[in-house]
Amino acid sequence: MPSNRAVAYKGPGVVEVIDTDYPDFELHDGPGVNPANIGRKVEHGAILKTVATNICGSDQHMVRGRTTAPPDLVLGHEITGEVVEVGSDVEFIKVGDLVSVPFNISCGRCRNCKERKTGVCLNVNPDRPGSAYGYVDMGGWVGGQAEYVLVPYADWNLLRFPDKDQAMEKILDLAMLSDIFPTGFHGAVTAGVGVGSTVYVAGAGPVGLAAATSALLLGASVVIVGDMNADRLAQARSFGCETVDLTQGDPADQIEQILGVPEVDCAVDAVGFEAKGHGSDSGHEAPATVLNSLMDITAAGGALGIPGLYVTGDPGGIDEAAQKGSLSLSLGTGWAKSLSFTTGQCPVMKYNRGLMMAILGDRVHIADNVNAVPISLDEAPTGYAEFDAGAARKYVLNPNGYLAAA
Ligand SMILES: NC(=O)c1ccc[n+]([C@@H]2O[C@H](COP(=O)([O-])OP(=O)(O)OC[C@H]3O[C@@H](n4cnc5c(N)ncnc54)[C@H](O)[C@@H]3O)[C@@H](O)[C@H]2O)c1
Ligand SMILES: [Zn+2]
Ligand SMILES: [Zn+2]
Image 1 (tube, rainbow, N blue to C red):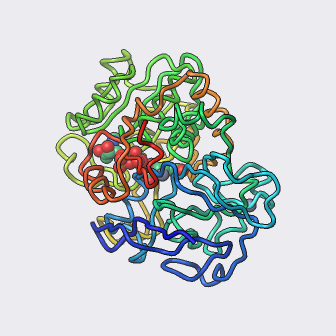
Image 2 (cartoon, protein in one colour):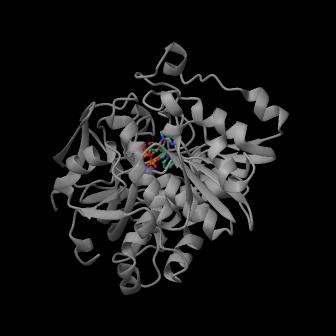
């Protein structure tokens, strides 16, 4: 049996590369594993040798100590891999397949999965609907920032790339199918983006840049990205977005300078609960800022796509209410304007195949747009630190050397 190494959360601000168990077809006890999931048989699963596994802003919430994630939790929910073993109940996925793993773990059998709401599968997480690899309160499925990882319900969850050689030529793009590309696309779709739309995306991190890419792919006439990070705004301009610098104040005035009106048709929150204030408040956390400003600038009848993550418990919240996930929203503004809201995990499976075809057909260059940068597994702690400091990069871990040529 091969050995296994993985990136683990050790405590606020600290991740380490550790030796860990090579997976088998059972969910064993470990950090963050829900007691009701211990001993769960996973003969429907596959073991992957990791080809690419990305660091995400969602991981950062845990690593910054802003969740109840336990120490030693193995991180990683953005996984692309090669199948090296299949369980006895797997029918169609084969050893040797090159696959993308939706970050949502889902069963394919429950009411929500049948309705394609795979972000809120009812059967994989005893804590609440919805699950993911290597994440707090998500049932305890082991993370994939590792050399090897177990994927349950493999026939259902895995997206197989049609041709391995062709896939390896675009592997950094395809590595974005496990989360941020579908997530950004979901943000744009649920914000109602279509041909000719004007769009504002709050946040120029990888998810915001993926939402902006998606809005352009969907035919938006103008895509405006807002952040207070100059390098990330430059990255957004590199593929045709307009930008607003939120250290200068609320986005409405700058949007008016671009569009002639202080509002957009569609808005995406790609920031979440660690949002900073605008203008002179841009150095301080103000968790309701993005939601309130999007309600302000979205035209009446419009929609907000909200992939940015909001939590039910935040030990580092700015006040007692925020520590319980309660924010001070001007919902009256949203109500008066008949705005629609879509929150939650992106149901990756709804979009990943179509976006894979767009990548393979050379219609979109997501890895360039988010500035995907491969690094070794041992460089993960540095990658986490640089990403936390606001690097305009999407770090892609390369635990088994597959990305040498990428
Ligand atoms: N819904 C999902 O399925 C899903 C999937 C992946 C990530 N996410 C969430 O999406 C969010 C973004 O992820 P990421 O990897 O891009 O994270 P990130 O932390 O790299 O990017 C967030 C960006 O928001 C900027 N920001 C802070 N306050 C702002 C404000 N008021 N207006 C505009 N920008 C502001 C920050 O400077 C930063 O550049 C996170 O909350 C993450 O957890 C959700
Ligand atoms: Zn992610
Ligand atoms: Zn399900």
